[in-house]
Length: 284
Image (cartoon, rainbow, N blue to C red; front, side, top):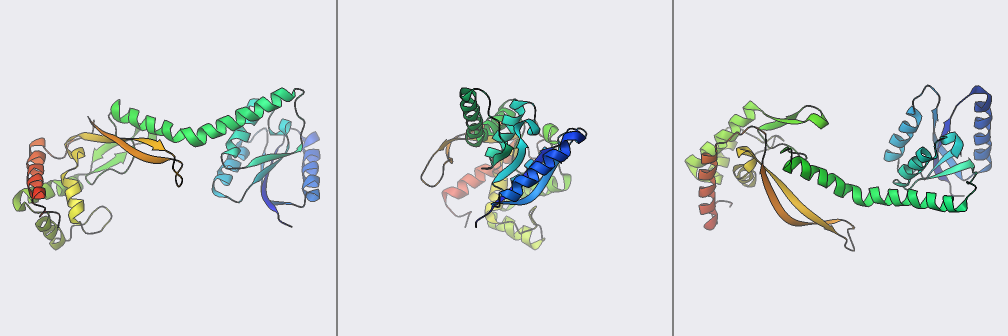
């Protein structure tokens, strides 16, 4: 017989009923041979919902869980809105709640509406939340002029907490960035700059030798002269990808982070790069 991996969640409220609730849940599980209990979670008056929080954290990483066994809606929470929220959150991971004692409301219309609300919110968060996050990144770039995602380029690092993240200069790396710009103005060749870096055992943040492409990206990165680039995408559904990004446009705004390279030097370097690329002799 195939079994279904489940978790058990019980909220204890008072000693008089706690034992009865536990016995009823255990009796139900012993009768329902199909359920394989992987882990149990509990809350009490003093636990401040740590049990339900631990349950969510667990099912996020354990993909085998298909159901959560609860005693009843009333045991899960006396607040039906909170209960609906729990059911909605679990639906995001394709998990449903199986109540040992299920008492529907007096109105069948309310039960139907309740299920529609839970399903609608679950679909919304699965389908629309990525766009909400993208809109928030756009706001941070265009309004607050902050780099909101991704790693900082060599020469910079993040400091502070998530909601108060700032970009500061890493002096040793910034000196290397300036050196690479200076060497390109001297050599006017990506290959010769690479030779210089290799001969002096100078490597990237990841500890690997600089490639010509990496040097080119560094020399053309306007982040060093104070600009933040933000790419705009629209999302389309294909047979292979429900949310395929399609590039629309690139926006560039002046950020608040410190500049490592002077604009004049940047323009000189990029003018030489452009001339060399016309002859296709600098990236090979």
